[in-house]
Image (tube, rainbow, N blue to C red; front, side):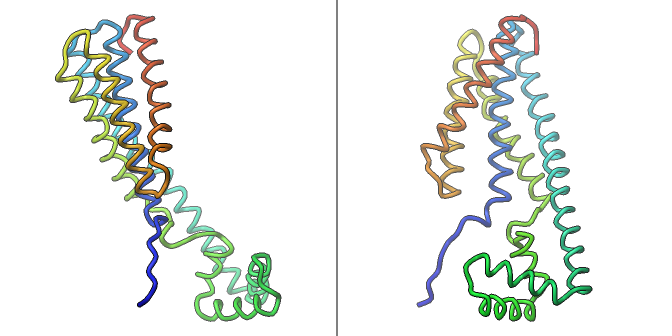
Length: 229
């Protein structure tokens, strides 16, 4: 029976975008409604501010992820084009360069040269992309995927504290939103860590810490200035 291994590196692109989006959605929306509520604003104004934050945040996340990841994709494309030209103009130099990389990784000179020759014959550009530039096919930048995952996950994350805000009215709203949002963040951190093969507890604590700080600071701002922020 063939030995099958299950790795998680192919999840990095969409998992990073999804976790970032959901985390931002929960933290920013919860912080926003807590800050507005702390300024003694009416409940309707707090809900409207939360809805506006959800829509604006989702669009901002999508645009930001698309632009940033597209920049990465452009850089990768430019590097591959440059490497393609170098392979065409100086194949011998590129072969020795590849062999040198394998020597640095622990192969002796003869074996490194043989490996470089065989990989160059099979797929020269692919070998240089992977071993010289560090560009992996399953880790390459995907702007549209990142934008969609970020926007959708932000909206889902933001909807959680927003629903709590809409349901609870009065002085109890702020602590309920804060506590429930921290629970949401802990679950998100744990699930993301689990999906990535990391410690669930560490992942949960990490997002809890920064989420609590963000909500606390925003509530303090709303309380001190007494205005809608």
